[in-house]
Image (cartoon, rainbow over all chains, first blue to last red; front, side):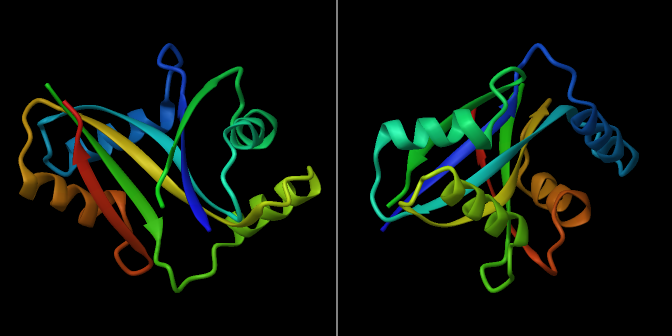
Length: 77
Length: 77
């Protein structure tokens, strides 16, 4: 079995309001070193077998929204 | 400026219903090689300076729920 980790992030040009809220909350807790935060998703897929085209298709069809999100993935084991 | 990526995952013993739904949806789309999926969060923090204790405190106090979640982080640049 192969584990693939998919990382999905909002495109850099888009405002990440949840990330901004996290950064503001960290400031309120006294973490003044925080200049910003952005939130993404990590999806761990357990696959019977790895095939690059398959994982790409899963990302494009279901896991990510290519209009507003970027994704990358890595094979873990 | 330092970028730190925090990865937050549900503890392995807990049922990840969102992950299960993703796996079922992938099956319905014909991706039969998927045996399971688990969903986590990735938070990218931009910090003026990195200090390990600080990032740990941010995770424990705000970013993760230590009762049900595990976290790890890596310094990117």
